[in-house]
Image 1 (cartoon, rainbow, N blue to C red):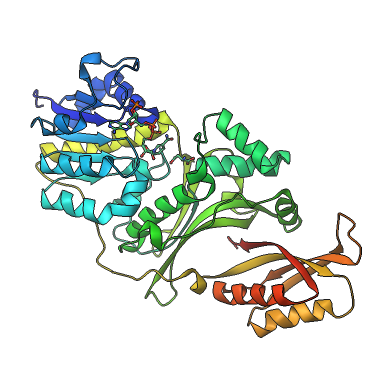
Image 2 (image 1 turned 135 degrees about the vertical axis):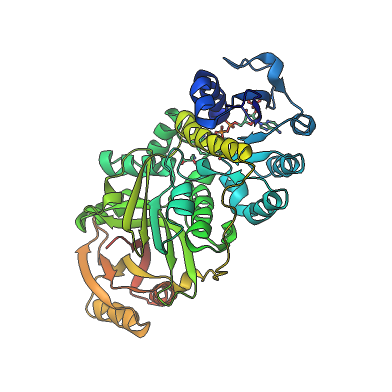
Length: 433
Ligand code: NDP
Ligand code: HSE
């Protein structure tokens, strides 16, 4: 057992960082035993130095993160500031000064993961980020290491706790979007500005990270097709229920059937109530990984929150410290397949389309012809008078067989031009069958 401690700089001491510091203190003996050397919190960089931080020696607090990294004795840096800058520059500075890095920063990794991995490799150091995807759930390491001998073909999951909470409330209590969002905010799940969550940016960043790992290729945030969930209505939930489905914001990553490309997307989708993801409630996350030899694996647990996320950070800290002592590094970026990311138009799935149409002879035939002209095969059609009693109008709900997204977009564009189609009330993909 080495007695000289490994020195850790903590950048950020908010929701996640404060829990990391607490666990480092309360579990110090266990961490020492598991690592083979003591770990010492050598400094904590924050923005507001005067804020009271329970359990943290005020002498460790600094607003000069760069000076902390440059003092020359830091072994590991934990970055839990978030955002692009100054996090990116600080992580680079950490590598330049000989420190390995543990980060929870999905936004930065989805944007600049390749450059950060290259910097880590150049300096012979580690970059670990289990906490960046799905909070406490071990997912990055199992995919990067445990499944390194297998071939992952598909990943489908719920990777944003805030939106799952909102959709679950809308489904189970009939609450509207705003009411459910207000409850998520009051419970501390949603941020003061929930845009990144509800517009799908947070899930898209996680999807980019997971796709890169799953398919051993580079996938950036911009490569991920993204739709938020702000347009999901109680009418959509009613339609979903009639089909034996619920609605979830899903991240879906797929290898093409010919193996020559991949797709990555985040959008709301109907999934059957019998699918295991349908029963993921509240702010929980769950991810299905389908691998050639392993079959279907499901990872489930708390995807957000200070303590769960800190658990993932601490797991990385132990791994990185062990590597330091062994004068080794863990796995770096694996992007050797260089598979291109296909456009959303090439994704093949099923669709649920709700149309407001004129209630007169020949309309159904006209609509069916439009689908046929674009090569989209209809599975079921249901027509009913408008619930709001609008005269001479009906609601037409069409569920398709699997079709390319581009073909569906073409169909919808053509439908909108029909005199008899008064409006396209909603379009939702149907997944998980
Ligand atoms: P918070 O906003 O709660 O904390 C951010 C911390 O960074 C604060 O302590 C803040 O200081 C500090 N900080 C901000 N700017 C600077 C700066 N320029 N220099 C030094 N310190 C700075 O964020 P979270 O803890 O929620 O999130 C941290 C990271 O973890 C993010 O990347 C996030 O995406 C990720 N994450 C968060 C999860 C969660 O549930 N919260 C779950 C999974 C990942 P001060 O305290 O003085 O304001
Ligand atoms: N805002 C994120 C969520 C935090 O709700 O899932 C965890 O990454």
